[in-house]
Image 1 (spheres, helix red, strand yellow):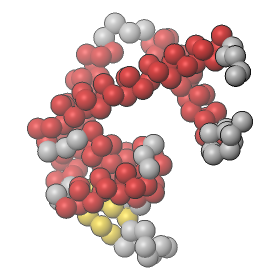
Image 2 (tube, helix red, strand yellow; image 1 turned 90 degrees about the vertical axis):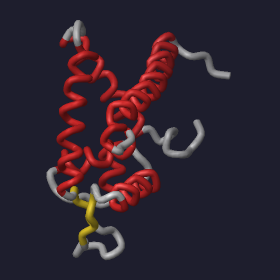
Image 3 (cartoon, rainbow, N blue to C red; image 1 turned 90 degrees about the horizontal axis):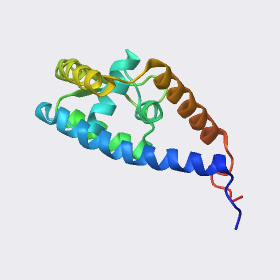
Image 4 (cartoon, one colour; image 1 turned 120 degrees about the horizontal axis):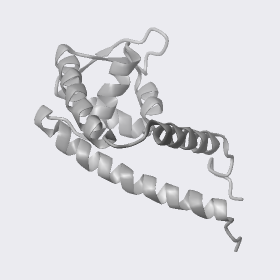
Length: 157
């Protein structure tokens, strides 16, 4: 068994904290958007399309939000069924249509953004910008390493 370096152990603690925070973010997000007939997962999909500013395919939604294609497809289907999204043809790929926000979806996303802004302001109160920027830089670096690490992509060390 390989011993972990001090840096690897610290990174492990950060990863465990990220897992815990993710769970709490999903729980808090579910409570935040429940009055709008949404869940955190559905909010993520609406956000991927709204933030892109143009219709997106399911794989594009999944990539933008760190979801599997299957997970994104499940949420897209529910959002379309409930009138938040509409399907549009993709002239470049017949089997991968675009999805766009309907008026209902755009309205819901604006409402969520207002609710989220208030929540984010409360969560950010008292945090230092320098620490936030440092945390973002570290997490972005780890994300990049995970994306390019061949060990993570399926081959054992």
